[in-house]
Image (cartoon, rainbow, N blue to C red):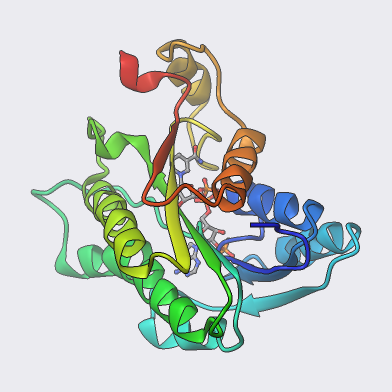
Length: 238
Ligand SMILES: NC(=O)c1ccc[n+]([C@@H]2O[C@H](COP(=O)([O-])OP(=O)(O)OC[C@H]3O[C@@H](n4cnc5c(N)ncnc54)[C@H](OP(=O)(O)O)[C@@H]3O)[C@@H](O)[C@H]2O)c1
């Protein structure tokens, strides 16, 4: 797929990983629909940076834990959907509340599923589309820490990626990037990133550029679908 002139929706595009993907798409000539929930200032700044690439950018606000908000985001057709927005709550199986579980599943699983459904329904006949989900390589070997509902939801995203790729072929390709330590959480304690990097064969934190590059590759290469690309610095080897 030639990205130039296509229209791309990136959820959670205001900052961090979503921003990196959005700016890479803008740099490749895509018009953006940039979604944010609460980060209005950073979203406006990211939109300005994207417009510097000469592309049109629309901002759309939505709380994706509310399924009612989904239809409005894909009201007009887009060619590319990147599901990056997600929560990273702390919980264990033994203490997760039903409300917490429902919230995590709504945001991290239901929203990408129904955004993809709306995307597929809106795509005009004769146009091809590409979806990229952002997941976590730790679905293969779960976190020892308190990430129960997050990990289960991302594991379901892995399965969803394959099922959707199969159902939506040949017109729409669906792939995923499974991230390792790309950016430490904003509230990470001192030394968190360095500690995890030291446990990784490539001995570093990935940064958003490696994610953006892989997302562009999965969108551009018309023979890839149902693929989950690990970007983990080799962490799965240990
Ligand atoms: N960072 C890493 O190293 C890493 C590792 C593994 C996987 N990942 C995955 O990569 C993706 C991006 O990670 P990140 O670290 O950049 O995320 P982040 O800093 O935690 O940001 C979360 C994003 O999700 C949006 N969001 C949160 N709650 C929302 C809601 N209820 N409705 C709509 N949007 C909501 C936020 O939007 P607002 O700020 O506008 O509220 C924000 O853009 C996620 O899918 C994450 O699971 C990241």
